[in-house]
Amino acid sequence: MSRILIIGAGGVGRVVTYKCAQHPDVFSSILLASRTVEKCDQIASDAMRDTGHSDITTARVDAEHVSELVALIRSFNPELVIHVALPYQDLTIMEACLETGVNYLDTANYEPKDEAKFEYSWQWALHDRFKEKGLFALLGCGFDPGVTGVFTAYAAKHHFDEMHYLDIVDCNGGDHGKAFATNFNPEINIREITQKGRFYENGKWVETQPFEISKVLTYPRIGPRKSYLLYHEELESLTKNFPTIKRGRFWMTFGDEYLTHLRVIQNIGMAGIEPVEFKGQEIIPLEFLKAVLPDPGSLGENYEGETSIGCRIRGIKDGREKTYYIWNNCQHQAAYNETKAQGVSYTTGVPAMIGAMLMLKGIWKDAGVFNVEQFDPDPFMERLNKYGLQWNEEVDGNLEV
Ligand code: NDP
Image (cartoon, rainbow, N blue to C red):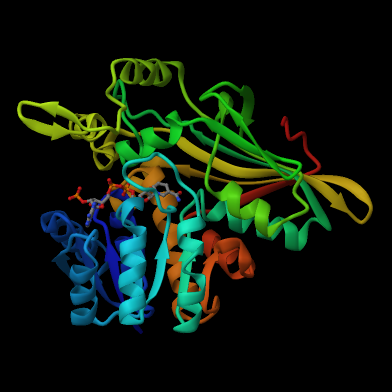
């Protein structure tokens, strides 16, 4: 029986609230807080109606202000804060957790607002302070990062003596019927995919131009899709935590129509993060673009098809070379029917709930700042199958990478 505070009432916040509400024995009292309290109210009333949970309350908070967060945390007194607002708020929320003595979980690493740069250094730097206070911070507990780290830890534990090549493959084979929309926060998404690509090879990072390297990969139940090499944050922690990895790469599929829109958006300056003057006011083009693009939370109703995300790994077991592919496919419609959110929010929110459950039950336990792959993957893997994200595996198949 635990009290939790969920911060962020977007698509992911909706799924986390629903999934936690399905387990009142663990998450007995839930406070959902965000910048726009009306969004929290809507999610809370939907979740209570659909799950029967009777104790979900709401509050308004600006998570960029430590003092506001501290006051809210003190007034509710949770055991854990699940942060699913935006990566810009990671450090203020961690700071408030340190000040109030509360554990912390998030799904995306810190990004400064004025620079599209995401890395773990800022959050890892808080390790000693969390450790000294006996507090536990779990970073990147969504799907990618999150489940991809758990999959890699599971492969290391059960399938390899040494992993050498890791390719994370992420395909959204869904169709929402809109000309252009992003599947999660447009601002964060566009910042992520328009920056330079990067992969890890023989102890070094190799930089590429955005979308420079591509390959057609075949995804289960979806088929062949053009996949582009991107930098993704879990590569940083996985290559550190599994030092036998010689090469680590991340691939994501994009359709031609999506890339054409993206190119135009960039060419006309709408992906910019520098302020521009407009009618006597400073605006940031990318923030303005977010305001006119479809809300990712609204895509669910007519979304067809499924996502497929997994890890393709080559290494050594008992002296011989082995390949291993582990993946999950998630249907947008099934996610929507359960939570009124689309598959990308669902695949992020379910792992956040599972991580929170393992922390609250003391199954994953430590003091300091950690990534998911540093813990025993088995209890997480069991719960993925039970709580909506079934996984599949193939040994010694053709990895294509
Ligand atoms: P949304 O944009 O739909 O939701 C973000 C929510 O955070 C909104 O409710 C927003 O409020 C709120 N928010 C923004 N700024 C503040 C603030 N200063 N104080 C309080 N609340 C604030 O995003 P998603 O739900 O799609 O994504 C949520 C998080 O999940 C992101 O960090 C994203 O990077 C991460 N993510 C992780 C994935 C993974 O696999 N690891 C995959 C997908 C997403 P308002 O409604 O007022 O705008």
